[in-house]
Length: 208
Image (cartoon, rainbow, N blue to C red; front, top):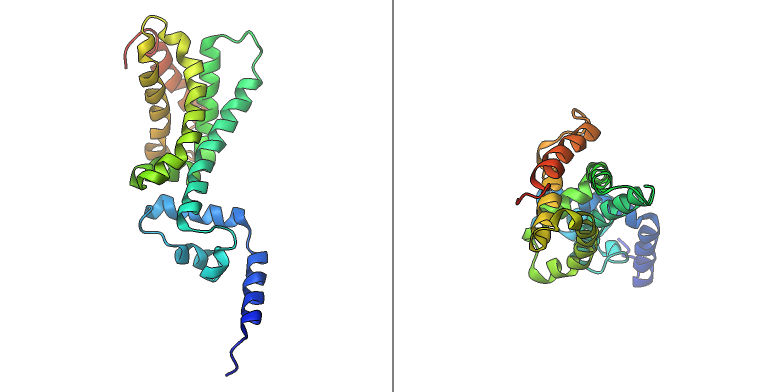
């Protein structure tokens, strides 16, 4: 049996690299991280499902850590962009309640529409080593800043409660990943229900 030369091997890896799409790799990685957790997933597992040899995967992502950071960032980015776009469509004079309700609806639609990424972000964040959690903080803080602006008017009496209000609302919305089946439940109706519970109840001058 004649073994391929190093040049031929590199060419074969290059062909595989050309055939693979970073988006496809990320989709598969997000699904694996979501279902199996951070520690259980290897680069070989992802490469196998993509249909690549493991060395070819390294053309796109230098390490498992780089890949998981990309998945985690995307899990927040897709929601942040959806909420930002929905808020930008509102008229300038939209009141606080309308803005918060709009953001809740947009958050839930994006959360469940890209559930592999968003679920991976929510479910494995606590499993990650400290340096990887810190790498994801910039995206998290950028999204929290949006909610800080939205919820600040609800904390005028107790402004010190704003960080806990932000964490409470985002946490309540994200928790729906664990118990909501979008195929069986109307997300818009769910968002209306959460608006009533959170905005008109706990957030109307109350303390979470």
